[in-house]
Picture 1 (tube, rainbow, N blue to C red):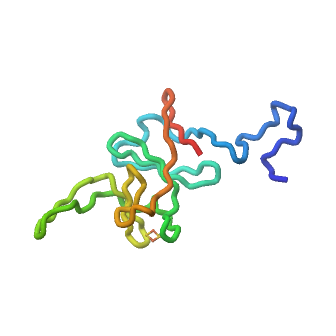
Picture 2 (spheres, rainbow, N blue to C red):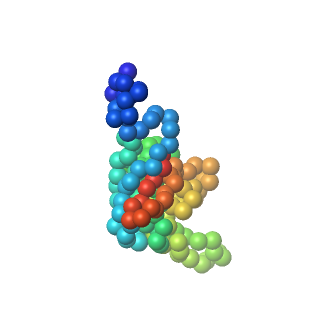
Length: 138
Ligand code: FES
């Protein structure tokens, strides 16, 4: 029997913190704690999650790359080349792109999608704020 199940299911003081299979909100940071361009790593429900402030919005990313399972949230955040005419070089989206530290795949932090293959994507969690606390749901 898993450790987090209650010994007595009728005892309200003996309920598990998390019911397996049910989504739950987890407090992960204080509002204003993660400044634009910064990140914070947390472990929630046994999962490593990266919290990124992307131009004022907090994005929560499972710390697993869909390519070969690298700790993707340790990667660099920056920009990428934009569509342009031959001979031109345009750079943009600074602060919105996460680079996997193993093979350099680029991910759009706002959608989670890989730039080179939109079928591959990061796992993002819903983020909410209540009062002074930021929560993620998983
Ligand atoms: S493991 Fe992330 S790009 Fe390969």
